[in-house]
Length: 638
Image 1 (tube, rainbow, N blue to C red):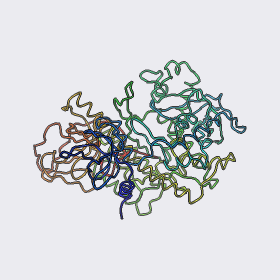
Image 2: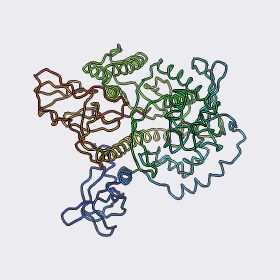
Image 3: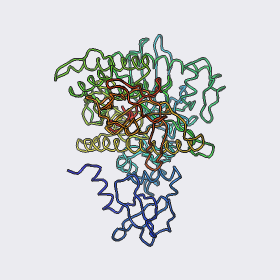
Image 4: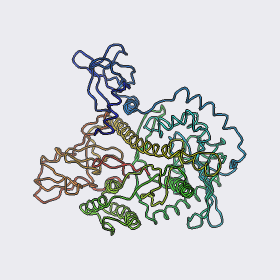
């Protein structure tokens, strides 16, 4: 049976949808080399724009084995043009129809409408926390001391107020299912008039929201919760760096404020400062309670990009998991769980975010791999029918064991958490509640990002319906179809965004090496392996492949539990998580692939049974990123 991916390729080819190519020469003819798709090369047909060597173009079927160019995207040495070609190759919907834009403009007056039942919270001190380069702001927070405990508000943009169930914007959002983010640009789920305008919680402007209001005791236990439509006015647009400087140390040294946010503003505002410290205190309590019930403590790898004054890509660093990130995460998790519990009690028709427990065979495989790597593990329940509570507790302890061992032995910071992730099932959307294993949550859903995720919009409507504040529910068939489509599209967009990262990072790496020299030696960590070689994360954000042919001239085989490459003649072992030094041999910017080599040719052959340590110890400690099994580390999505 053909795969879904091959079906998509055939459909794109047969439909005549323009696909991206790189212009090359074939003798005296112009040829088109495919980009990001397993397609053949074609000759250029007459009738389109005149091509130039190394142009990136869109082309459609013409006659025979020829394709007609319909648009020139740019040059092959322009990262923006390559990323645009990637969007075209994967069929991501770009731009909006006139009907969608006209409807978005027509709903504008609703922002000024006075809603009698909407609570006015514009006097409540409120702030947002986002990356410096954030493109939309769909959540805000308010926190105050209440006795010995806390009163907290999570405000989420009331997107459903502006998106009619039977309207053009709704139909387009359902087709897209989510926004797509690439390093230089995004394709939003909603038109800019909503995503960056009416629904974005920018400071100083009244915005309509759906608010979850909590009361927590001094131990972080939730003792009360309310849900309602509100009107807020955000006082501050904060960045992670500014918040970290406030809650991590008494001052703002080293933090980079967002445009319009100044160090003196934060330092001189006692209400804001007090709110941030209270929010951090509450987030810490919530996190400790969550981990105590068995939630997994696994990080994720994401690159943070830097841009110059002209907006061009200038650098990348591994995104740190700092106190400010944890603060936002805990508040959003609390809101998602509270809404899920409420809608579960109401037996609402809604999309849950489910994460089922791992299969017994996957658990056994993980333990075998960690044993082969010499990583200590806590006691695990055994048998084919694993008790859910005991398994949850054991996995939670395991993630802490791994973190402690990798810190102590200075290896495995990336690869070992990735093994845990691969043993788990993938989170998905479902019309029934199955719990969330990774979060140790009996009920969970996505409520906090309706600007960029369609399931959140479905949840908002269901919540408002059961509150008697408008809203609606999907029918059973519609709900099942939406769950399947949103889950499938999420996986597609994951692959797309990862490829976009690979391309952007290759452009940056190539530029760095041209400037600094190709002889630079990078410290790295072995994050994946195949029979033909090793995947290595190096330089903090880059990943490349080190062929086994460069490892001393002997044959290598994969160990029994697939955690090491073992030399047949010498017994040399290259293990997942081991530090290793590498040099870059080749960068393919268009495919996003990097070929690596050892710093010095490996020619010596130790005696059989010995173990060669592959390079330096003490590699970087960035969390995992999602890749195909056996190919590096994985990004986590909850």
